[in-house]
Every structure is written in C-alpha cells, then in structure tokens.
Amino acid sequence: MQGYPDEGGATEAPVGTANGGDFQAAVSAHFSASGTAGSDAVGSVPQQLERDARTDAVYGALDLGTNNCRLLLARPSRRGFRVVDAFSRIIRLGEGVSQSGRLSEAAMTRTFDALRVCASKLGRAKVRRSRLVATEACRVAVNGEEFLARVRDKLGLEIEILTRELEARLAVSGSAALIDPSCDYVLVFDIGGGSSELILLDLSRRNRQRDRRFSGRVDAQHCMVAWTSLPIGVVTLAERFGGRHVTPDVFEAMVAETHRLLAAFEAQHGLAGRLAGRRMHMLGTSGTVTTVAGIQLGLKRYDRNRVDGCWLSVGDVRDVTGDLLGRSYEQRIAEPCIGRDRADLVLAGCAILEAILRMWPCERLRVADRGLREGILTTLMLEDGVFAPARRRRRPV
Image (cartoon, rainbow, N blue to C red; front, side):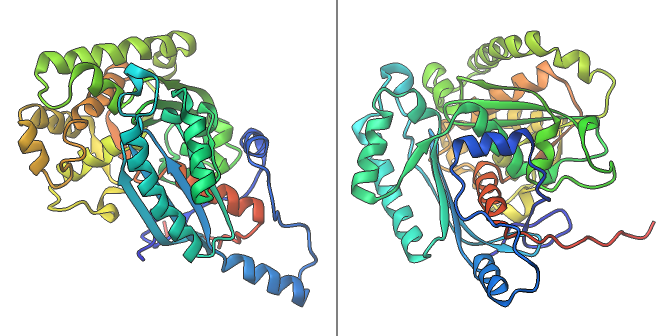
C-alpha cells in the first residue's frame, strides 16, 4: 500500500525525535506504556534482533468518530512509518445525539458492522500494539460507554474514550510535519462530526533551530499556547440548521452560531492581538478542508497524494464555498470529492471554516489528510523506541 508522503516526496509519514515534555506526560497519563525500549547497550546481538523485530512489527490506530470509523495499520520505517493497511467508513455514530442524548440503534448497528471489519484487519495483521479511541459521540451520549462495552464483549476491541485535550494534542502531533517553521504562529484546527478542536502554536517557543521543519510528533507540543474543543461539528450543525438545502441565509446562520462559540475562545486568549502583523498560517486536518482542496484542485476522484500538504489561499477556499452554495443537494452528491455520504454535511463544515477565517483572518491554509490516527501511531512507536530517524542532508543554498 502506498505510504504517507512527507514534504520531500518520500512515501513515509515523518516524525521527530523524542523530547518528553507536557505532551508525553499527558499521553503517559492516558495510555499505559508497554514494551517501552530501555537503555540497552549498543551492539548486543540479542538486543539488536529484538530491536529489528520491533521495527518490523505492525502498529494500529483506530479513530471512532461521530461521523467516521477509521483504522490505520503501519510499520516503523527509517523516517516515520509505512502504511500497510487502512480502512475508512462513514458510520454517523452521532446521528441524532444532539437531540436525544443517546446513540441510536441504527447508528450503533452501522458502527458495529464497521468495527467488525476493523477487528478482522487487526487480527490478520498480528498487530503488536494498538490504541483504539472514540471521540465526541461516545463522550456525550449517555449510552456511549455501554455501546463500547458491547463492542469489547462481542468483538474483543478495547476502545477508550479520548479526552478533548488529548484529542487536540494528538491531532497536532499527527499533522505537525506540515507546519511552515518560518512562521511566527500557526492555528491548527480539526473540524469533526460532533466537535471541533483549535490549537494555537507559538513557534518562538521551539527548542529547535528555526530552519528545521516540524517532524510530526512532540516537537509542536512545546509550542501550544492555547486550545479549545467546541461542542459543534458538521453533524451537529447540519442537524440543527439542515444540510441538504442550504440557502445563503441558512449558511450565514451556521457561521454566526460557530462565531458565537469561537468568541469565547478569542476573549480568553486574545488570539487576534497575538496574530496581528505576524507571519502565520492555518493548518486544517479534517474532511472539510480535504474536500475543499480536492474540489479546488479539480480532482475527478479524491487523491490523497495530491491533497495532503497542499496549500490553499483563503480566496480559493471561499471560491469553493461559494460554488457549493450555488449547487443543489443532488449536484453536491455528483461531486467526486463529496459523494452521497457527505453531501448534506459539507456546507456545515464550510460554515465552521468560514467562521474561523472571519475571526482570525489569514492569507493561506495548509491541508492535512492526517491527524489523530497518525498521532496515536507515532506515540506508540515513540514509547517502544523503534525510531531511528535519518539525518536529512542540507540542500545547497
């Protein structure tokens, strides 16, 4: 299977060097580390064989979200990890939760079917270590834990409910390789199905040389100066305002509702003042921004290799949003980068994105088709000590 490309075109997901810090403490508090590499003497044959066996092992990460069920299986590689299998299915687990407070039987049945596929893949791959996490739908539904207990009993999958803070941190960790280190600030956001996370990174807090690129793991965690998790996502917003037939007035109402929630974050942390006159860009890791990028690129079918890491101007984003607002529900279904599963959600995501852009104006946005699962995988591999990143040669000036 094609691996994840880094900025230089390699088919790997880049990672950095371990440096502990607040992120590692947060991860350790939430995830019990097992198999962590010790300080074995270099050159010992048994220890080298053990290390080789670890680097050939398969690791797994499952993200059970409000809208999607996604699995990623990968092996450690020279500069990160190489994907060996992946699975993604729209399950709409959080459908109706914002009204009823409960996961519906239909949603749980759809999700259970998807998780059965994931269990089979995990078993066939003989995964060494995995972390299986659930996010907003299971956090807020009164029967969320009951559903996960049923999954554990019937499928053998131990899925834990992720805290909002750790979800934000792992999303940053998984996508940080795409940050432009020449900027002063980066605003990372993840527009989910039931919640949306925003994280402000102050790159002046880096412990590394300014000319070295972010490497996708704990490097960015030292730069986090503010974060929030909004109780709003594409599913909850579309359920409240309607997603199939979205008029400009309905769209503006969705933007206004999102803006109201963002205002509390702005009032607490004063992002607008910090960002004024500074070099900054946004980094979006969500289905909304990858969809917008695919449409802007004119793709006849979604191509991750072209979308992940691409840059969009804010003008590009608004052009796509305006185009989608002018399309009917059926026309959005016909768009190759949307399809039937997302046609009633995409404008809700665009409204959340538009609210972010209005609150904190910027010129460019980088698109990440990576995030939570990649953050989990790199954390597990970090704990096992299986990385030995190669030094990148400096390019001629």
